[in-house]
Length: 194
Image 1 (tube, rainbow, N blue to C red):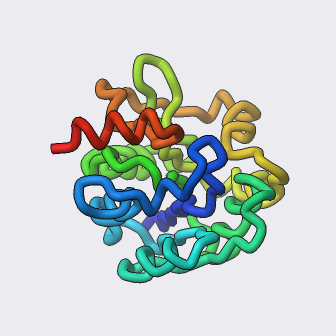
Image 2: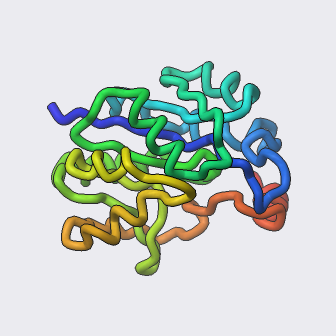
């Protein structure tokens, strides 16, 4: 049986936003709650949430996750990736996703899981109109590179080094993959939330 892990990145400083966007209300609950409520936990061996704020930890602690504290979120994505991987066992594939994608559907994660299980040596990445999106599955051979990332560098650099291993999974709806990076995006989602 293939072991799959997931690392949910929830330790960002929200520099472009100006406040902790994961805690803002959306549809009557914090932004971060949406990704956790729709996450298919049974499909994964271990799920880690990397956090920097106590309020984020309190939300994540309600779910079956391993909590990994990032005391230096200003060091960027590389530090969160290393902490997330250090908090769990090495898996055959590890999915990295951001906590500010409230429209991401369970069915989308399931489709990515199925693709990963069928091609466990591939880097499985959703694409919309040819553009890369999150979340991304990295196979075991990528773990040493991911564990050595420094600064505000994420997994994209690993993807670029192994283009022959990339397996894009096409999706049609760009809205589903929106992350809340600016107040304008948050305001639009709030206005259109049903």
